[in-house]
Length: 121
Image 1 (cartoon, rainbow, N blue to C red):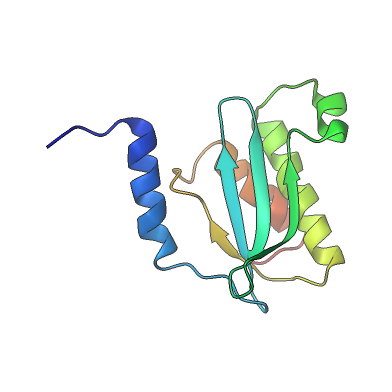
Image 2 (cartoon, rainbow, N blue to C red):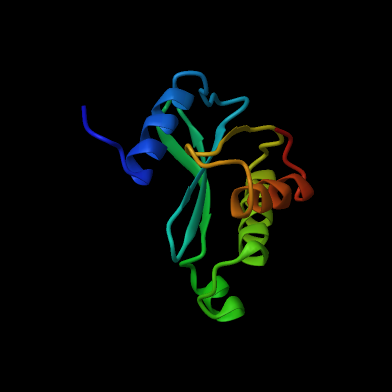
């Protein structure tokens, strides 16, 4: 039996969570992925397999505003941006998929930003 590293553990948790979380047309899934340098958020309809809206810290407007930093402020801004884009598409409620990460720090900030933009979890 081998030991798992941190990334493998996150993937195992994410697979376990995805068995319970399913996005539909009425209530799509807000999926979050973070790396050491960037954070990504997508609103996904799992029935059709399409991404409805997305936002990431790689976009030019974020890089210009925050200068490539990744902190709680950036994560909250990404969350509010994806929330506004989803509201523009007529989406009011989502299922939050934290991607196997602990609901703390940047993940929580992103969720708070999306809630402030008007999305319901």
